[in-house]
Amino acid sequence: MTTGSTASAGDSRVETIARLGQWRIDTFGPCSYRRSDSFRLGIWNWYLSVEKNRVMVVRLYPEPCRLAKEQPPLARFMLRVSNTAPGRRCCVSPVHEKVLRGSDDFVWQVDSMFHGRFTVDVEFLDLKIASINGGEPSPIWPDEDMLQPLASRSSLRCLSRMLSESIHTDVTIRTSDGDLRAHKAVLSSTSPVFASMFFHDLRENQLSTIDIDDMTLSSCSALLGYIYGDIDQGEFWKHRVALLAAADKYDIADLKSCCEESLVEDIGLGNVLERLQEAWLYRLAGLKKACMSYLFEFGKIHDLRDEINAFFRQADRELMVEMFHEILGVWKSI
Image 1 (cartoon, rainbow, N blue to C red):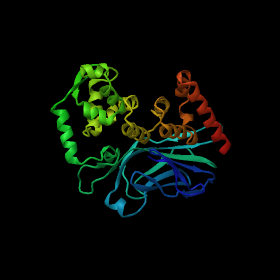
Image 2 (image 1 turned 45 degrees about the horizontal axis):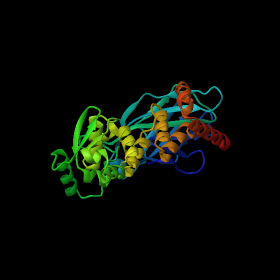
Image 3 (image 1 turned 45 degrees about the vertical axis):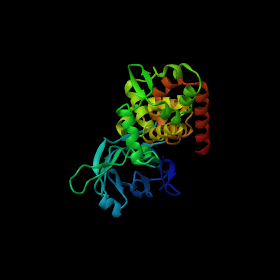
Image 4 (image 1 turned 135 degrees about the vertical axis):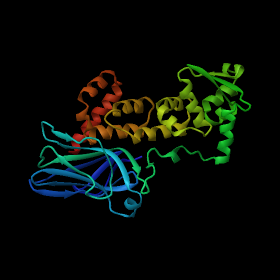
């Protein structure tokens, strides 16, 4: 999880969070060239440069090195140039998808000229390793190792078979749209809430049935897939908000942490307010900090005027107080 890393001091520094890099340029004359310090996103170090003569152009390219040559990045990204003066003005590039090897592979001619102080943002929507032999590119997000339990692959295969083939299952899980079979011992070893159900003389223990009617059959299948060490990566991403709710409800700490890291990795304009609400609801300090930083330190709240008004109408009062204090902290640092 990347939160607020910096390249170096001065206005050549690029700050990063999640998949966003932000370069704040304090001074820029009518005929100038500037290059940022290197900054890391994904597995590559990157540079941004701005040059201006008759027109203004922005370049994005990976640091020239053996990694960029042998594993060139296939990037899907967009850029934004904006000033910070009253009457905020910005230019946004189309979404580009290109293999980037050097400084000439991507050049964006900005439609407007910017002088003095302004900000250049690059947001990576996806990053893959391009095949140099014409094969399929290899994704670097999400990180599948994040989901790999510590148990050996042999043990995972056994647990997977126990679930998929219902080998000696002894408990029924009733979801909102169907039933699943599982094992009391496996559930109890994963969750203290399930362990308490089966240790005491409760209804769940007497009837060997658990009602989880706040989950669908598919999302509960993903939950069991995680518990038994056989979750599909795509299913995890599809159901991660439901998995987060279940991890909080049943006190499955490692799943909750995994969901939080995943949600931090793809914070963007379209989901940051939703992520902030989830962080508040499930007490996720890291996700909340990343959302606050994205909104206030990186100035993205200016692009969410309509959405933030709707958000404030239904947000928790204590959360709004925290957001207000965050704004004050940013103002004091300017």
